[in-house]
Image 1 (cartoon, rainbow, N blue to C red):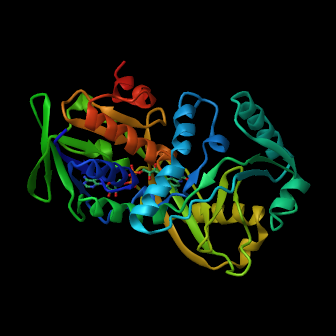
Image 2 (tube, rainbow, N blue to C red):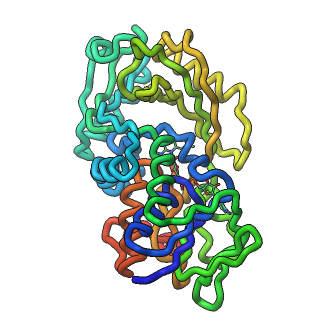
Image 3 (cartoon, protein in one colour):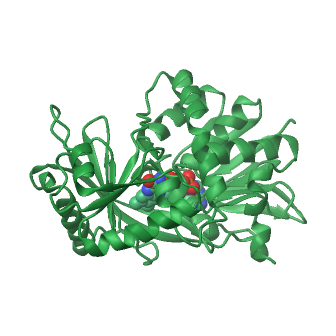
Length: 372
Ligand SMILES: Cc1cc2nc3c(=O)[nH]c(=O)nc-3n(C[C@H](O)[C@H](O)[C@H](O)COP(=O)(O)OP(=O)(O)OC[C@H]3O[C@@H](n4cnc5c(N)ncnc54)[C@H](O)[C@@H]3O)c2cc1C
């Protein structure tokens, strides 16, 4: 198909989709109102954790998350080969650590739920957990061990994607806000961006938590996406001996060690709209939980603290593919799984744009489900 595509939003979703479409020979512009990759995609923990993170109520989403993880190794290979950059993809597994008997009861329930869903997890004693991660608190009484949950440095991924996208012939327009999507009759015609009309056969809305704010979308085609705020703290581990090897969770926080020595402590989950502030309470809560889990964090320098907005749909699942308006496509609403789902989103949505066929994996995740 010959086509002229405009993608609204230069996060991990817009950039990875843009890369796939540009490689396929389409004329693609990613239009980003700030610096590409600096939204939620920059702030995220980078966990690729469909197994440990599955929650009761999310059973319908689980097959997409598991398939999303399966597609990561090839995506990393392609991206690293295209750019010569490493994205720190680590297959280290994840631990969900109980710090007292209440936590242990909660995690045991969760463990039984995951086993019922045939997820590959194991139950460990406190002794076994501390053997794996010797710096963990002596209060660790038990844990769920999820060996097939991985993680990646999402900041490196978006930097690599920017390069891969432009190398493949894509045009990245940064500091260019899209003011309006132009829909005429039943068809999309392009966007108004930075005061200029950009004509397009296909417009993809990949504007993360801001997707429902775009002007010009017909009322019944507006994606039901809201911001869910998350604060994180990044600490610096000693270069000689990292105090943590694997991703570790406790009841309402997690620690993600990166190969550059950074230790990300995340994340708050706040329904406060687009409030951009770091808060004393949020950061206090994260650091207290991190210290209870791993006392050595007390000594670690703070590198930075960040706020991001998860793009969260009404049912926490992404909104992908056709919209009912010809040429208008959605790739948004990834909530807390947008890093995990970036490769499968780029592959399936680009397939849809190139062939007109909607892949089975994303059939349950179109906008249509909210109209029924
Ligand atoms: C604290 C936190 C931790 C997370 N941890 C994980 C994790 O461990 N694993 C995981 O899989 N996911 C995680 N997520 C979720 C993940 O970050 C998101 O789902 C994902 O980044 C969404 O990508 P995106 O490209 O849709 O959005 P974004 O990265 O937010 O990009 C959207 C872009 O659109 C731009 N934009 C908006 N409006 C306009 C406009 N009108 N014109 C032009 N540009 C516009 C914005 O400036 C932004 O750059 C986390 C999120 C947060 C906040």
